[in-house]
Image 1 (cartoon, rainbow, N blue to C red):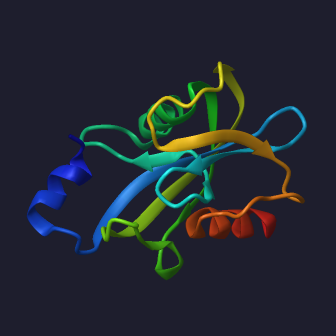
Image 2 (image 1 turned 30 degrees about the vertical axis):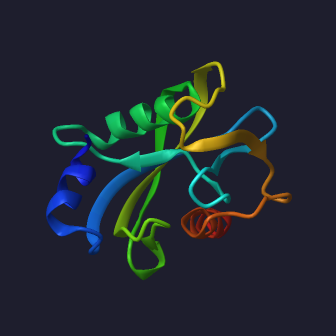
Length: 147
């Protein structure tokens, strides 16, 4: 079990502060990788919660590998996002106040594949032709469009 799952045994579905990493994987045609989430049937960005004793960079690399089969060869810090816009209630009722450390990579290796059961599909999209995004991914994309 992971750190957040362990905490949930004590606090139930009440809101937690969770620190995590999200990775913008950008291909040669400047498209961004999204994953079709199994829990919401909306498109999100690869990422997840930090585990105990893990650096945020290690979190980013691990989550990307777990969710997509890809290994980030180089990460670039984009920004840190938090606050009301990044509060999220999961379909199972768990609530999370997310602190998202956003990275991007154009240097990655591996074969794109669904590996952890959290995604139905993985696909690159241009910013001009985005699918239905989950709320946090939508806020992240809105943010990067303005910087």
